Length: 186
View 1 (cartoon, rainbow, N blue to C red):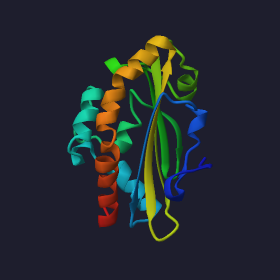
View 2: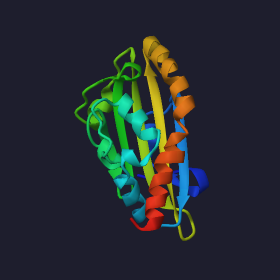
View 3: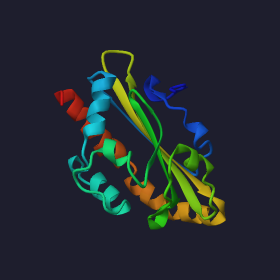
């Protein structure tokens, strides 16, 4: 499940099988003085309330999401579907008109793979933790967005400024909170 090699030797899930030519791509990694399993547990348990801007931004984009939802819970419930999961990895997806928060109701990975409705987009959210080659670990997050049709491309272009302005929060707040928790032994 982890064939690709990424930042600082961090192996990533095989994301090309879900979206191979993204219109938008965002990737962030953080190192920690913790083993991959501890770092992964901390990342899964980190709550939206433990981030200053990322949590409210997610809650605005995904209506009905509470402040105390953990990232592990968030990516395992609608509008997301789990595409694949490993010991220290999770790939989730969602689809629809993401720019207007009109998400498709998907039953699972097969339905996500078949989703090709023009005027929409497909998005994958991948997170994984791996050894850093020393005594620590690296946690990474990658988001890929695929536009479907001309109208989908226009919609994805509309969210590009939002991604450009706030995409760094994934690493600076989300992954950083997980690293702090893992290093504290939470």
